[in-house]
Amino acid sequence: MRTNWVPVLWACFLLWILCISSSQAVYPGIKARITQRALDYGVQVGMKMMEEMAKEIVIPDLKGSESLEFLKIDYVKYNFSNIKINAFSLPNTSLAFVPGVGIRALSNHGTANISANWGVKAPLFQDSGAADLFLSGIYFSGIIVLTRNNLGHPAVELQDCYAQVSHARVSFSGGLSVLYNSFAEPMEKPILKNLNEMLCPIAINEVDALNVNISALEVLTKIDNYTLLDCSLLSPPEITENHLDLNLKGAFYPLESLVDPPFLPVPFELPQNRDSMLYIGISEYFFKSASFAHYVSGALGVMLSTKEISNYFNKNTQGIGSVLSKIAEIYVLSQPFMLQIMATGPPVINLHPNNFSLEFPAAIIMLTELQNSTIEPIVSMDFIASTSVGLAILGQKLICSLSLNRFRLSLPENSHRDVKVVRFENILSSILHFGVLPLANTKLQQGFPLPNPYNISFVNSDIEVLESFLLISTDLAHEPSSRQQPNLHSWGGLNLVNGPWREQPTH
Image (cartoon, rainbow, N blue to C red; front, side, top):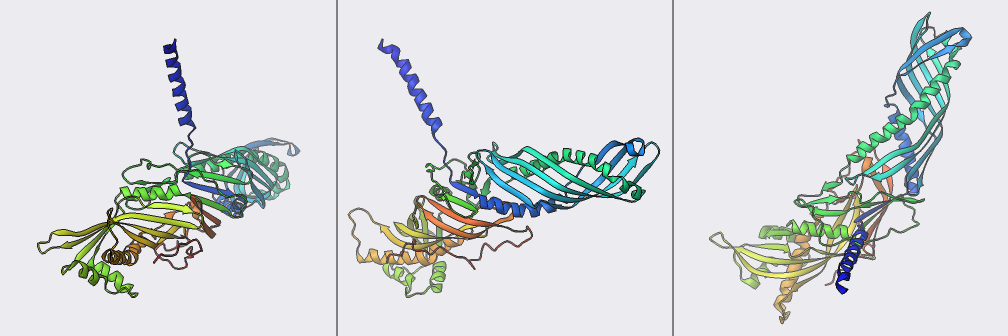
């Protein structure tokens, strides 16, 4: 009897495992929140863009036939061709979030000035010329549904489209225009009918074109010669009455491999009731994956020659003395030497309120070149360097800079920290401070890219370090594409984060 229960127990166990695995959520490395203020600003910018884009819209010819009973004409065939929008305005336009669906667009009291060529043909005559059409009372409503495609791109779709033009006034020129203008009013009704039938298909086509452009956005970005950044959408946008949240992968990978790092992101929540247009939360996972990817790619290492070290110290002679002569005094060296510093593990990253710190476990190897050109190691030691991170936003990149807090050699067990060890520790700390960190900061100056579609830049930005994530609060500004981009290799004008959260160096 007992054996009959064994398959049942195994089945229950397997079902439990499946439930557990399927319920495991995939948390984002980056969260972006778009607020109502951003939508309101988007209306301002979008209307200006639409006014220009409307002039480039290709409108198909309007063809049809109408009977003109007051002229005793059974039918008149008409054709409006080469239709162009010369002016377009939607003064009363609003965007609002529809929870769980998308964004509702509503506009009324719009106007448009349109020019076209015209031609008419009746049983007894035909004629052609030019015409100007003034449209008023333009009304539009629709819901922009936001989703995610299979490749992690955002996708948009226009639903519940309704568009109507209430009034049209046509003015003819050329041919017998004086005669046509006298009975233009009866022709305005069929023009409105055909135009109203075309508006939603035109709007849907424009949204489809936008969708094509969005799907072409890169979700995998090459950051440097070692790593890629994945910013694909993990799930469809989360929409409430007040904001829209995007959950992005936010993970770094080595160039040669897209295997996830051996740790998982943890959930974090963006703060509520704030007044910026956009919030970007960058989790510890983002930075840890960057650390891990650069480590496994072999990017965290440097070799300094005697000349390079001397150059750094010549620029930064702040009472340090001749470091090289001290090293030579300790090790009785007469020949040039090289210093190799390499990470022994991924840098450890910690984000706590008002404190962003990194610890670098590394090894330092001093080598010398003998007379027969062979390289011989002199001494090798492990150490841990603790640094603080300064942060800034430059253009569309998050820029980091490192400053040394503590440096300590890792000694074998039962070893004592004698004067020689402390002296050597101080020398290496100086080399790190004035030699290695400037090199690292030069690389970090390249920055981490932040989302910037359609020439939208960040203004009035603020950076906060919270528990397990970094919060960027910012407003937005649209820049014309011809505007010169900021120089990413210049630190001029940067407002580095030098608040009270920064650790003070320990001497």
